Image (cartoon, rainbow, N blue to C red; front, top):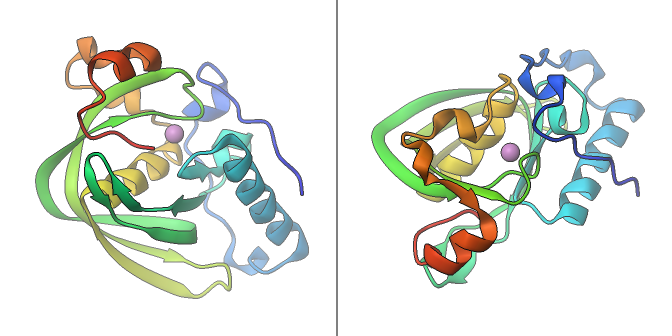
Length: 182
Ligand code: NI
């Protein structure tokens, strides 16, 4: 078990375009250890997704786990722990889906972001095999948020209205009846 430190907004790595993972290293001990560390870190910090640049590893790798289940906003779909290596996204449905997003690298804040509501993702899995997923709504938002990290982008770059960025405490006090991540 190794929980890594999550770097925060202002660290230059979060603004770099991450390098593709060489498929030949997938399955190596060092790579498996890195993925294990990311999962441990995700669980320790309590998020739904973590991209490698957030632990200062500038490679195109993300782990996502959405527990799902009923919430006050309705049923949130589940995505079991999934590893995405070199993900490529294709938009299937441009219709915007709005979510109040948060980010472990931008702690304590929430911002309202609209993203395409349907996507297809092609990536390698932990065995180095191609995997394809099609996702809608909340899960499509979570994946696009994580994959943005691989391009040096943060959700705050995508606010349509800068007034819709706020401290989490105030968000929960005044706006928590709207769909939000975690
Ligand atoms: Ni994030």
